[in-house]
Image (cartoon, rainbow, N blue to C red; front, top):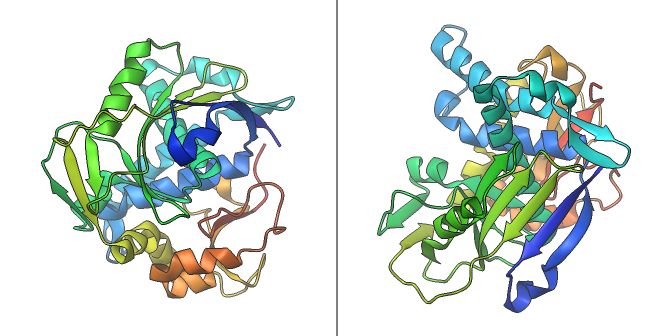
Length: 317
């Protein structure tokens, strides 16, 4: 399995232990699973409350285009020796194409690092929750953290994620930190962390900076109210809808997962299936309870996430 370099900085209290530099195993399965999870969440406006019919051509084309960009970004990652790196073919892209790859890789690595370092299995885009009415804003600001996450300790986290394919100035980190720290309360409590997460695709291996801004006592930012049941319904909703529509009648990989092929999105994914714990498929609101029963020895390649979402099959080279 390949590795990325993760640097955690400026965390305090119970998260002070994560400060420092380390190498984390990050397989291409893990990156693809994160891209697929973020993609399904990000574009729920296209196909919920039901999957589009064949007559909904505008929905199909929009979904394939927007989700396809995320999946194509994954294809530019390769394993070099023990490192996860950006493939040389990335340099042939134009600047706008590079920006798309950087964005998606930044989102995927933010999800992975939030899980490995902060013990946050569930990370979701704030705008999606807000549009669905699952997140209520008070004291709205134009710039805020991209992502909100729920940790295993039942605490809330804010993450501003960015990906870069070229060297960046320290001001990028400062801007991301300020965006994250604008959220001062979630359900009447201070977030456990407000982090900037910057993924550097130009390094070998790929490196990720996770930095928590200092607590300054600011109370004039945004306050969020999130119902946990609504959060989980939206986190898993699009995947559940997809599995209901395209779910395999035969369990080919593991009997505790409901699965469906991913070939619809790209021939590149022809030998892969997305899966979800059947217990979560039936009752997403109880996800925190059900993920405790995930088998710890299920795989060594990162096919199964700590949120109960999985990718099965064989990855293309």
